Image (tube, rainbow, N blue to C red; front, side, top):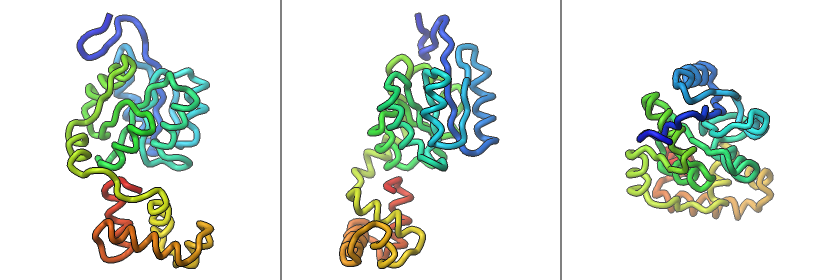
Length: 212
């Protein structure tokens, strides 16, 4: 039997919390620990530690921050979906970027929430995803619909990500195993699609929209 917020009558939901900022992770764990039907049984600070921790603790739900060292939360979500499909994923983010929402849903996440959401909302999301529901912040959903699809191809995104550090075309070509002409073409196309003046602006716009 469940209540309207998805709360089970008896089952304790085992949660994995993945967040690279220790204070934030501890605060989230403390807040969730106040819920009688939720127990944080594993905590990690890196995305590449998620799968092993989820498997060892036999978790029901994984709460994943997007920006983590080793692997992003979105990459970790895809890894969990492939290896442990029964584990439900809730993606948390500081910045509600429409592109991140799309990527998270495609990776298998069942919920997408901003970190400053009320604790009760986060706890309810944990219960709902375990019950098979999807939970998406309404403002983020509206923004994603208004924004439209990511216009960049995978290759254009790869080149823009590599260009973010200020590498020259020659350096990018060597790192990505492409010709300099191909690198220039990808950068030019991305700049054109994003209606900006240069690669730095293209990187900035793409990051702001969650497309990188």
